[in-house]
Length: 433
Image (cartoon, rainbow, N blue to C red; front, side):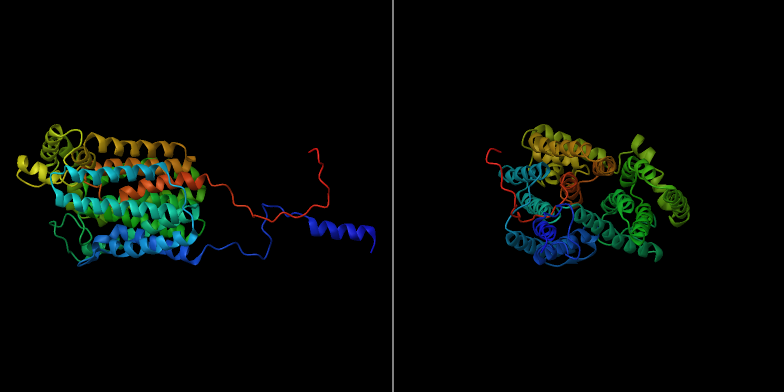
């Protein structure tokens, strides 16, 4: 063998492949089967959130709770099998702190039975966010979670539209909504999916999925108008923050499609929404300027009076209704998430909740431009929507906080490289180096 042939053979055996290039023919390492199964169950849980009240199992609760128990069990097994925990975020720690304060309020609550229920609900929210951080800590999985929520809204859309087409509604032919739901809460859950569908349609490469998200946007917008819910319709104005980012991100053909879809949506809304629904939506201005917002002003005055009596610790989780019953004669809920937390958790709990909001805004400002527009639109929409609803016990609000924390984490992940075994070098190292 010649010296040149021997040198080439030695070089081929000792050459270190590039860490940024994966050898052809070798498939990427797949995650353990238990992790994939756990993530599937978690996506099923997220999918059921927008329509959970449609199916209620006696003795168990909503379909989301039915799916949530096995999702948590399989998730725990998957994390134990993996042998390590993903890093937690500051947002998750603030949610845990807020939940701890709600649990602690049992010591001074004015309604112990209601507080026990709220504690159970809060612990479920913490479990959901913990699973989110342990199972979806990658950009691909984050998009899958968003996709599950967006597609889940179609179930409520179909049921609402079916009731409209068959003339079934309990609200005097002016409001249509899926069975088991409060129309206002359903409308806000649907409104929150609109920025997500725009985001998914912008980052997805598969054309059939792009059209699926666009169809979901149009159908969900129609459903929201059928509910004739004034607060969520006002909250939808937050999406205007996202529209310029989506428009300027698109190419010329996509811009034409967006303009055409908007024209079609306006035309359909004019003819496919009953006049009674438009009349109710048209009363937004007069209701804000001179109305009592469906007795909400009375409820808010009673809540503020209760807060003045116990400003530091509050009346306890879930005790708002029993606390205002003496002054109003009716066990009203707060119809305002911020006021409800202020009255029930006092200044301490309210301060933790505001810190969580400020932390989420700070995270949004550190995201890339397009993601920043998406999640700021989500926060603005959520803030306007919960101003007229009691939503601190609902899953979507905590899911949004968790997704914002996770979005920052996955966008900062370094690109994956192959880990290679060191190959012995034929060169003798310099002892002085």
